[in-house]
Length: 311
Image (cartoon, rainbow, N blue to C red):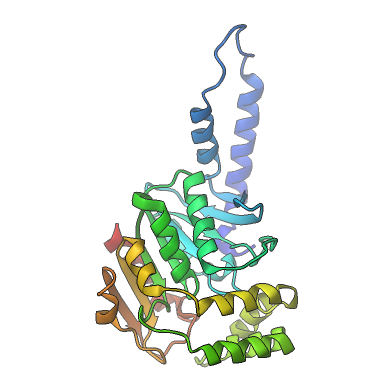
């Protein structure tokens, strides 16, 4: 487990011991006593599952979705990873964020340690998963931080969560609400995936690390994400990217969107995006698609500034 949660185990153990001892010392309910209030039980359960630690939540369609909690506070930062990524990719952000906010990192179904029992794979469904977790944990004052695919996932989660979400921070994503993926490009990628998913995915991922001195990190990201057993998930989502109505998703999110994007190779069309949402962006020079991993010292202050502005 990454160092961001290295201190969690002691806190979790202490909480478990305290809960057990308290339960052992409580007297049995008096005869004829009123049954527990289900609403109170639900609130208590949500509170217990927000203590620093590791948990698993079950989605509406039965997938198990691991999530980890660090820090505490009235506001929650919920970290949503990219295509074929997982929650450990936020290791450099969690210690910084959890010093100020409750911080939650999730594995979406089909990714990381989550299960992959889903008949069809759509980015919009991940938005429902994240919104369901927000509802289950009774979270308010939430800022969603989404990297790459996590950006549109966060837009859908915000649209479904209403006033619970204060805003979205996009990490090298949501560059252009009006962009349409060329069908031939997606078809070529799907054909390559069918022939060799792991190899094609690995080349694709490593090509998004143009910085010098990050080969080891690129290899790690590739190894964790380009697993042959998840080929069906990766291919289905790649196909779904071409079906997203991003203009509508920007608009229906209903919250401010702040992006921290690489300056190249994809331009961030700030004015175009503002036709559909309250949008602004900061551009980082000389970084690839994973700026939070390759340049955390530069990225983290920008992330904190964006979150503070939204709150």
